[in-house]
Length: 508
Image 1: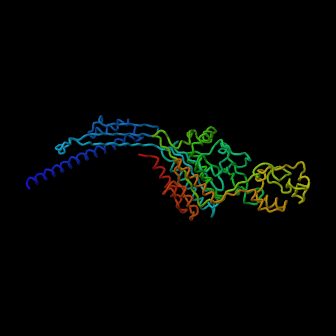
Image 2: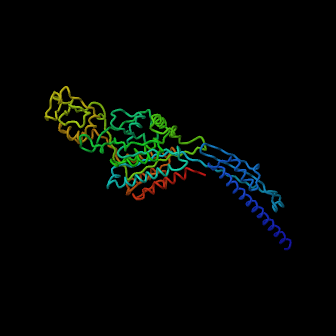
Image 3: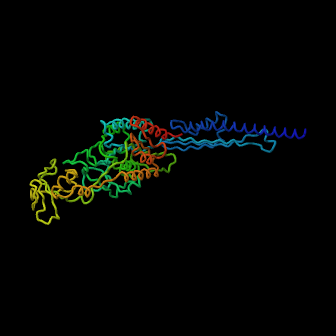
């Protein structure tokens, strides 16, 4: 028993000794790791003016560690620095030596990187009619919230030239503006307004080709009954406050553009998302370059939009698509062939450029009429062999007709009076309507394409009461990226997104 007890005691002493060796080793490792972490963090700081390698070596010497035994590497970029230090010391054992273990390894290593991200942000904002209800209640909440977002993202010493924001107001359509749309291959049926109508396949990609032709949206009013159309009822708004603001970091300018926004029209989230994604896509680079050349965009942004993924590991680039709406997709319209272009059924005895056309100067032309009297003169209410004004009358093009009157004015007041046929049937032959279900699918398609490309998508639903929440939630990058808020919490949602973006910009 005595021998056995002594044997057990020796084993216990060896175990305790081994534990002490392990504790000593771990204590040394923690000390070495702490020094390494502090050294690389200090050296990687972009505000650090000393040589990064010298900073790490100084930290090590002060801790009694020989820098020659530590491997130090420094990667330096224009707005990024990465410092790595690794070591593998050995510590002699005191007790484990008795069983043949002469030393234990004390490893330590650390990497610190500080970089200022180059950000591209597309701010897609709802400007539909519901935003203007109750004396612009929601619009008056959106404007300060969006302006605060712009200020928070752009304010800071590391923001100059590193953040580009595009503002995309949307309602029934998205007005690109003459300068921007002129750099794409939009069809040329008219030049009254500057919107495009996409095909389903266009929503499967973030790119928007500058060479393949895209259909210009007809300039018309699908809902009113006025002559000329009410500007607020036009599918494609022509006022400057509706145009896209591309690529800027001028806080005051961006705030002014937000302040100028006005609510009117239906809701087309998918069109805003498509334009936002297109302005983040690298295929828009020649468009931006052309705007720089013409003085419309600052020179500092030349070369953007950047590629989604950089070959330089020190370059940190992020793209954000931020979509805000107060409800679900509703209506979108366009004109069907053959009513988009070419000669119309109306002749006019007067000048189309001198203001509203005179009803009495109009004649309806029916080429299929068997009688020689193919012109219905609205001034007399009779069919005749020539239009009012005879040889002086000019046949209007369809774009000229829709610029002069709403579709319903044409079908209900002119077409029905001249032919006696159903104005509703004729309206359906002229106007193409895009429905909510199709628009929701398109929204999901373009958001999915953006996310797959590497764009981070935030969405905000304001006072939606469940309408559109599923679409906005599906569009967002994931849980926590969709904000379902009441109107008074809109500013908090934008602030939260701005804070998240700013936290991700500076990474240690």
